[in-house]
Length: 398
Image (cartoon, rainbow, N blue to C red; front, top):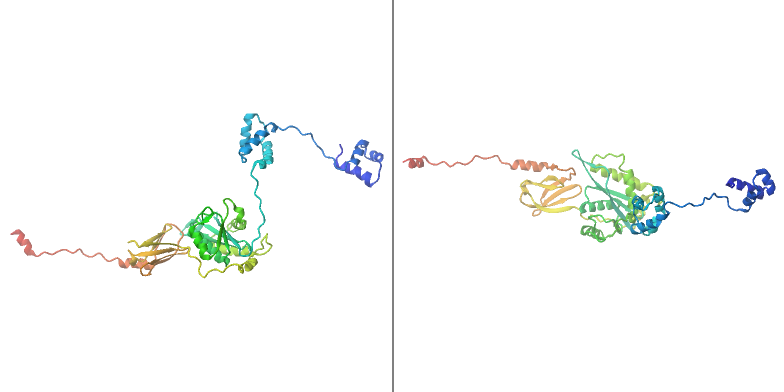
């Protein structure tokens, strides 16, 4: 059998040079039948070996039966089930065959279409957890989360650091992202994050109230469907690989400052898919977005309490001092992302105003509270003793 190069040479000599078969035989030494077949064949020669039977052939029906019952059955388990039946096929043979036939028994794969968003239509949100704990002062570090937002049209992004996934902190993160983006989209898109999603695709009461105050819509993705919010997923993946590595943070404020600066640079780069800078498209998108209200919805945690004899309130394992003069009176506590305050319900008097501390098991005492406690401690007085007249003792003796 001639090779492809010889086949091409014979056809070149015959069709291009115009040589006869006899002359080609004289020059190449090939048999005339070989020369004749090369001239009459329009396709190059291909070596074909007669198919031989596979060791897996007698067991293919059993494999099909197993895949019909469980399409995701691992290849290792299939080999274990086939061995008692006499199958000696190697792992490679079984895996190669499974790779070909498994899609026939699996559910139909999901298909996707490219989505084009109108300006101001949606803003996608997700929660990203940094790999390293964040320094919070007092020699401590604790785990944090970042609320990441991405506008659908411009792909402009923003992020806010929080230290819990409680509903109030999640809403504060959303509000912070919207404030950094500078406008209100028509729809906020979330996965089924606890605290934001209630049940059966419905929002939690706090999230519904938040959206109602802002006059925006909400949408929840189906379970295990990250592709439905791919814009923020890609932005979050980029943050995981490009923001945190190689950085050091003095505290939570430094983390947020560096995060804001990083998003500013990211929004100024040319987006690979859009072939445009998000910051330029954001200027156009803001014209289609509603303006932010003068005051964003209150996302602080609030409760009322009676000031105890030890005038302190407890927040996140920390004790914050209260005005000692208000002991026994009821106050309203407000815990924001950066502050802890309390106000007397009856008079409106400020019971405390502290910067929030994210380190744990600390006692935060205001100087004026410490002085009031010191001044309120009176020196112990002498015990009053009754002085009886001596005549009483004389009467008892007589």
